[in-house]
Amino acid sequence: MSRLAAIDVLGGSRLGRLLQRIGYPIAGVAALLALWWLGGVYIAAQPDLFAFTRFAPSAALPAAWGLLVSGDLLNAATASLQRIGWGMLIALVIAVPAGVVVGLSEMLQRATAFPFQLLRMVSPLAWMPIAVMVFATWDGAIIFLITMAAVWPILFSTTFAVQRIDPLHAQVAHNLGAPFLGRLRRLILPAIAPDVLAGTRLALGVAWVVLVPAEYLGVTSGLGYAINDARDILAYDRLAALVLWIGVIGYLLDSIVVFFMRQVSWQPGN
Image 1: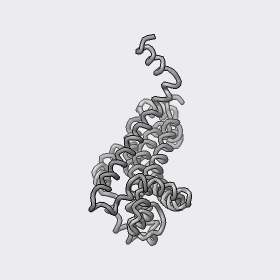
Image 2: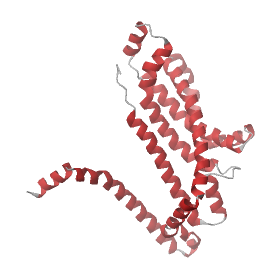
Image 3: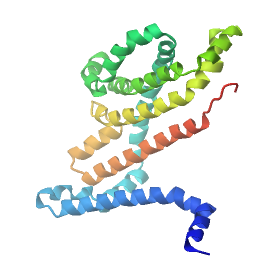
Image 4: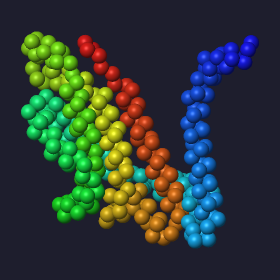
């Protein structure tokens, strides 16, 4: 068997598919760790940066394990996930109905295009002074900031999804006498579900980024608070470990949304 034929056999085998599936992610993680290690070597070689040497993997990885086994990570992540969950839920409750209504009305599309785009371009953190004044609790202010970060990707994804529904399907449903709630349940919502989930994925990414600086407010729990605390006490190994865990948890959250995106499919007549 020639070398090329052997490669073809391996590529078509189960082992070959498995290697392709896990090989690239492993290579990417290895490259990231290598860059992290090289950064640590560079910092260690600079006398002016000696205080930051504990950012290196040799110190940060044991600290990450320590956060996990001590329960500190669970406590911090639980508080942050509760805020993210409430913020995302409120954003969905606001954005999906608003997106459906705007998507169904050309007049509303034209009337809201500029205001929505204007508000979308405002950084969610720019609302922080207003949030602090309006809400009685720090948690309420943080959830508001997360909502402001998440609402726009979901709103625009929903609006565009409604606009893309085949008018023929809507006309057939109307001619058959289907009430609006029936059309909403059997036609509109199934049709826009993939786009709503795609918008939710984008919104979750933005909200997760906003979470850490938002938790620099007066709360005493959460991943952002833990990072701020580690910085204040110069525990740079713990700080680097928290950054690592924030990335891991964010990746897991994104994977959950991707899983649901793969489960949702809609075809006319289903």
